[in-house]
Image (cartoon, rainbow, N blue to C red; front, side, top):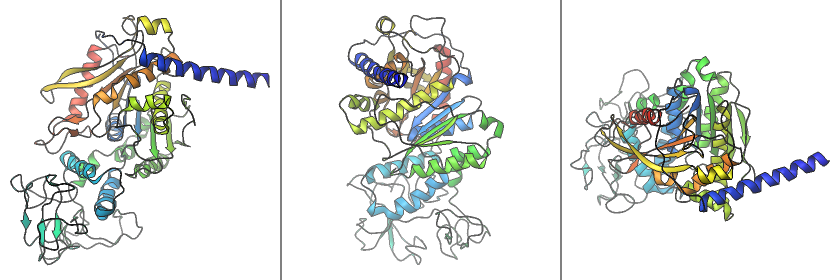
Length: 505
């Protein structure tokens, strides 16, 4: 009984200790610049992680480069591109006028545009463009345009209806990558007018999963769904998807997992989380990912939820973990992680969820690096403090200067002989580096290190914004090089820069 009471008192003291130094670091400690050193960059001490779009990027890059990263983590990201293809087709465009309020349709349309830049338009196949639907070019994509005799088996099988470009949700917001049937001939897409979808040939979805499975009956009509038009895939004897789907699958975390040699897969530490009410259904992605691991004979610990209070921190002995929490997709305060940590102090429930997600991620990654320097003290924190800043480097792949955020732990400046593990933290869709590399998350990292919950790490935050349009780029070498660029190659330029200029272990 005495030991039990003693453990409880220690737990309360530890929690109070962590909270105090979180506030202390946030509001009192200064930030100082430090100069870089030459690093080592050992894969065993290099991890990659991300949230949402960045969670996808982390899993895609990490699983396709298992020789470079031994720990990979995703917070609520798309992990199954075949299911994402189905989701866009059935759940998003098939339910176009009745979508959930979050995120708004304007955000969903922008995401579809950026997916089309990254992988090719999933809705239409156009031999003249990976981005625009057939018949659409730069010249007519952003003006009222009517296409005559545009065949679509589900909506316009005889071609009598006009098919139009349209603005959505406000005038001037041209969709560019979609077309609609103009039922009342007013050259405007009105509520209820169908958005055309040509993801694949028609088939009988016997098991209801929205994905064509071998043995399911299909109609060999080609993508337009009508015999006799000689469009792509017609009467070729096989079921035909939009060819751009292959670009999605080439950068698919689930496919990487399924095809990775088992000895390499066994050597990876994998962490994923997902909300049970995720508006993008990324919880289904996470379940599919977990089942794929189990199908390869690997265990994965599945847990429901986080601790009920902060700053409790979860630690796992398992090397593969899925945490399911009750809630939706993001939960960020204006996608600013630091504000979420500050919200914990004010008792904000949403801030608590985000804080738990990130502290659990940091603890998991830290626990997988062998050895390490745990703990610091207020004196070191005051006289050799951590640094969080936005810096820049030259990316040869993009031929331009790119920004990145970086966190250097307490003591880094004054310990020239010490080398540190490095964690790459990839941001979500449209999340800026300034939101990632802010004082709130710096204070949380300081507090975790001070309490001994996390070892000292260098944390790097790459720029997830496409400089050509100001939106997310999914951390891939994008198919459309006019509207996009080689952002995966640029990420590896950053890795090279970090190892050359900072003391990575």
